Length: 161
Length: 248
Image (cartoon, rainbow over all chains, first blue to last red; front, side, top):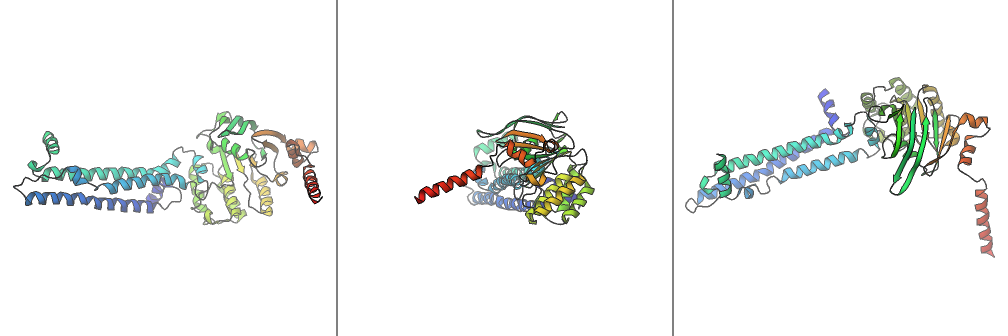
């Protein structure tokens, strides 16, 4: 109960913050699911390579593999930026509560309540997107035969190795 | 001591406040009067730092900053409460942010206005919203309580009772600056009247001085505003003359 009350400090006054958290979690879950498209494209590439071993079919470039896989995260990020703006607007909906928030001795209170969750959500979104991109890249370079990788990636990975 | 020096405010090219300067001491109850658009609301919001303005506002010689902002409270007819949390949640919020919160006064005023702690402001009547707004401003624990048309929408009996209660509960060091159109109603309540016209002060007088001079607050306002008593008669005569010419 105390944790719940403490967490409410990071959301607009009177906002049902559980909903904001739930919707963001759903958006991130859907974005993660959508990103599995990269995995499907990877498997298709590997299958094609296995199907035509003599023809020296090259694996598509990593950017092609990623394609639209991370779009869900960018949409979520955009949604969180809109949420931050909305949080400020909501301080003026139904009353001018922003007057009270701007009169508080705590300078940052108003901004913390408007920005804390969207900023935290944005950080999680970017980290998750970067993590998944790294995972797909790792699978791409380690599970694809080196001679089927495009030169740029192969050279880059070789240098790292 | 609340000191306002050379306060200026522009809305685009329109000068809403023109070098407004005055001082309000502890315990004063100041009526801020003026026609619509005279700059009353702009003045109060500028004092609170809610509007960017020129000039200086000081409290006991110090500029109004986060350090001393809690010495000012604000009740506005626009309402500054949170519409979706209960009255009780407001109490908790104010207690958390304003250490000088006056809890005893809060419960007394809640009882007086017959407000319930579980009520949500968004669902209250306009009159009740005003009451909550005023309660919060009075209980914040501020030395200077700024009120901008706080009773618009309240019935006469409610307002009159409230003035009486206010007179009874205010402590000697508490100062009220009350912006209102209801001059006659607050005549016995305010100790000083400041008149604004087109963003400038056109009158500033202690009510006791007016009484000594045998002038009522309303007459003082009319005189300071350059109100001509025969204005209505002239308009009626002009209109009547036009109609007679039309008939000919």
